[in-house]
Length: 412
Image 1 (cartoon, helix red, strand yellow):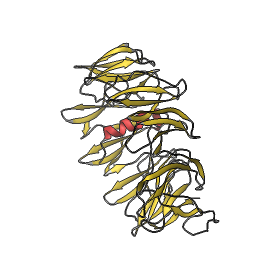
Image 2 (cartoon, one colour):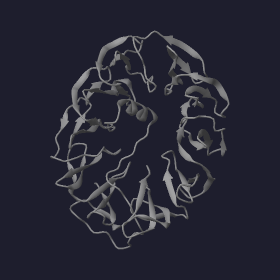
Image 3 (cartoon, rainbow, N blue to C red):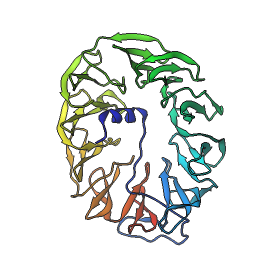
Image 4 (tube, rainbow, N blue to C red):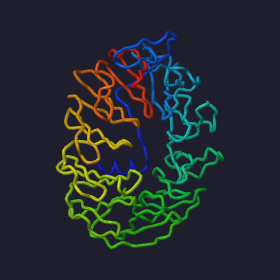
């Protein structure tokens, strides 16, 4: 099971992907797609090799491929839309969405350096980096972390400038600047990469919207601003971890190997009751937040104030949709709960994928895949060999037979 501490950081940084099965493609047929009872077909099966789907409904396509669907030395990447229509042809070996605006990283050869382009194919930076990852500042402006020779810096596509590569770990946003690390210690840098605070902290946590974060300096815990000012030291009853986040919700702390919760004044709200760090997750306001805790390897649900809504009941609980529903997994089966922990009725199944942004999830029944919505209603019957949902759309890639070609269906 994924650790709850990793869930805290992933949610704080806002990364999200939805997929079920693998995907691969080649050029689309021009024939009119047929209608089926398993979902309206938007593109009849034509695809042998696809890569990731971006948040605007575009899919990376590789062609040509061999008979098994594997890439060859001649394979090139292109983009298709949610109807299977080609939007952009490239001569690149690989392109990959960065989920921050309309930007893609690309490389010319397998294991080669990455460059940066927009979704229209305009090259913003020739291949230069061993790795490129999203980095969004507090105002939502897209920037990117780049890695060269084991060190990370920040690239700005608007000014087409980059800071020096000085961080040993992936930088985290801090106001207009970022958190960086050297020799396993952490400091703060300005937007141009010049150091604001030397790397002396054991850790600096994710920054909140008010440009404040928690830090640890030896035995000292406190609050630091994005400008590097230590505004408060904290007298705590236990230990915090590096993903601790000031999001207005109760804060998890550890004492004697168990985890409890602190209130907004850093006083004990709940004595330790969980076996692992508790993930308190904001949904836009404090009242709409929720928490996940672990006990004896099982996950339970808390409300925004740390009250247990449902005792540990699942192996894993996925993210909640805007309407307040989440997929949980319990052994080989799955279910749907709302923010109060109540079950949503749905068909018996042998597995569920997480919801996409519109509240659709793949489910498995009798060895085949279908789709349910967050009310538990079947919108695509379980007759398909594989499914891969679009992140922000009401479409999905599907395979009728294992290792067969892929097509696109509508989910509504």
